Each structure stands twice: as C-alpha cells, then as structure tokens.
Length: 110
Image (cartoon, rainbow, N blue to C red; front, side, top):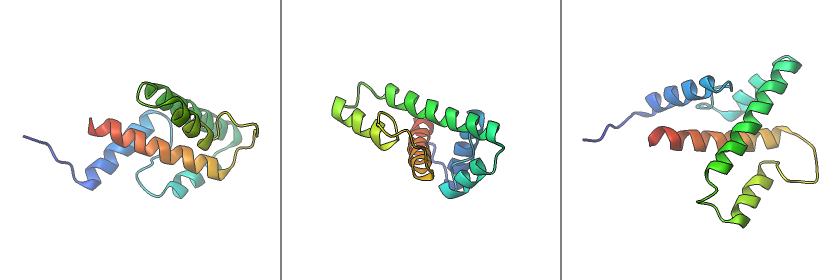
C-alpha cells in the first residue's frame, strides 16, 4: 500500500523541513523567500546565507558517488562555488534555494 500525499501536505512538510534547518520556507515562490532573507537584519541575513551555502555544499557532497566530476563541477559553479568572482547576488541565492528545494523534496519522498 502506497501512501500518497497531496500537494498541500508536501508543501507543509517541505516548509517544516526548511524551518528545522534554519532557512525560510521554500514551498511557495522562491522570490518570497529571498525577500524574507533580504529583510532580515544584517547579522541574521549573514547567518541564513551561510546556512544555505552549507546546506548546498552538503547536498552536493552527499551526491558525490552519483555525480561525475564534470557534473559536480558544473553544479558547484552554477551555485556560485568555485568561481573566481566573489560576488553574491539575488540570482545566486535563487539558484541555491531552487537547488535546496529540489534536494529537500527528493529527501521527503524517500
């Protein structure tokens, strides 16, 4: 017997999963999460950005066996890691949050 969840339940589970890890809920529009982060005081915003970066790196390293070296490098580069530029932008944050949402959704379905 399979246990099927409706989209609302999956969104709630994803939000709780994110909040447990100290990042904003990701089940809705990612721009809303970005705006939440940008409205935080500077110290809190820095903490949240560091958590997001850490969670992304952890997710990439968890998939090391599944990813080829070139694919791992391209994922890291697209998320703003391993680049010569040390510029952080809303676009990079959007990519990282999107990556985390996909990763967390995959973890919740296991």
